[in-house]
Amino acid sequence: MTVPRLGVGLQYNPELIGWFPFVEQELDVIEILFDSVMTPLDGPGLISASGTRLLDMVAPHVPLSGHSNYGGDFGFDDLESTAAVRRHVPLARRFGVPWVTNHCFYSDASWSDVWSSPLQFSTAEAERVAERAKALQERYGVPLGHENAAYYRVCPGSDLREEEFLAYLVELSGTYLHLDLHNLYANALNHEASGYSIERFLDTIPLDRVITIHMAGGRWIDGQYHDLHDTQVPDPVWDLLDVVLARSTPGAVILEYEAQALVCGAETLDTQRTTEVILADLHRARAAWDCAYGAHSRRTTWSEAA
Ligand SMILES: [Fe+2]
Image 1 (cartoon, rainbow, N blue to C red):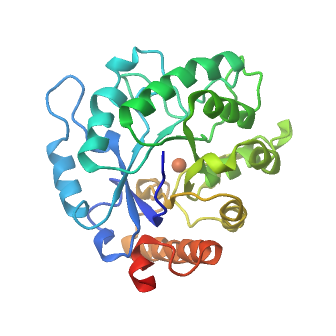
Image 2 (image 1 turned 90 degrees about the horizontal axis):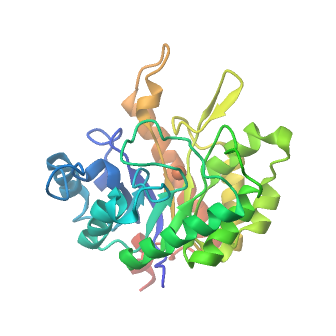
């Protein structure tokens, strides 16, 4: 399977829609969240009315990629019954996405209580999940990349390191990796005492299978670092991006923001300030990409090279 080299993009998060000027930016790709635009599983159709309105705004302007958080991809329900097969696969076809990425969480048809439920990092579970991943990628017909999760506790029964699990999974399934560098950073902070090592993680996963990269920010709350996507991308995560771009050839670097998280405590969402934060991060990500791969290596700069 081939992965087009698109460049730097932004996740089309519902929290940003309506005030962030997506189509005015030189985005090389926009990542849509399949979960946020699909119809419910207990009804007809494919794309919700609100999803149709949202996609009409960007689909004519920018290539779309697909991402699944709650597809039940790695859960225990019959794969045919999951949102991944019944909604995400046809959505991927409808929009002709070049790849799909999915989050390494357990989930089933009930969404809300499954966030941050990391997979059990064990040989047996890698083998079970690999069969689902292989079957799902065949249905998509495009590369399927698995996102390393930020997690607070390791799933009981784990007997592999996270990176060993991911490497074994893609070896068995023939699928790919979606490397979230902020999740990696968050895990290193939260699991420092148990010997979590970013260096070992990057030396263990097959970097040639990394098809996309996520960048985000977060914050400390009560002694725990959270992947909240509500700050500028931290400097150590930018340093990681330079390292990974030098050792891999992803199709895109995608920035993630969850503005809703800014509305906590005494804070209120300041759309102008947040827009400036996002634009500054986009500028920095483009600079990192261009430094690694050349000035005319992104989709929006291809024509300059011609
Ligand atoms: Fe992510």
